[in-house]
Length: 240
View (cartoon, rainbow, N blue to C red):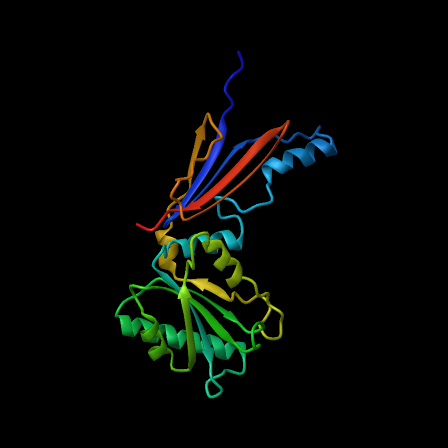
């Protein structure tokens, strides 16, 4: 009687987001043929997002998920009188604005921001994510005072995801002209790192990943061959 295969599992929670993968992992061998190595790597290195913080998008997605259903996505643009001429000038504006927000609230708060300058009308601008409980759109417009503020919910509708916003906020590459090479244009508060739960590592006898029927959003991916299998699923819990 054959033994029940053991699935190696990783589950990551962040706010209402749950990401999980389960795998029957093959072992690489120096004696593998090129075909065997390619097939095994389809399991070991699946071409999709994962439950662990593998890429910049993965890491940002998890921080955004900590805002849950109570976050807003802001775009802060400059009018002609306040538009900085250089990227360094934009950084100085951000630092001053962050101090202003802390003074207004009277404490530290969670945030994610990115600086852009190549999309839209090719003017420097900020994208900023804040908790609705910390700031309202009216407060942010009042405090910004350097141009215009547009706002929308972090999750726009059923079926939306934090990953969509993460990809959008990381879409601009440094070009050495508008955005200097090597500059980190997307950052978040340290409090989000501290609030992120550790990933859960465990073993299971089943590769089934269960998703609640009332999940607001969901997605799945799987692949397998004679060497093993990989299954990945994510969902965002419905708002209570």
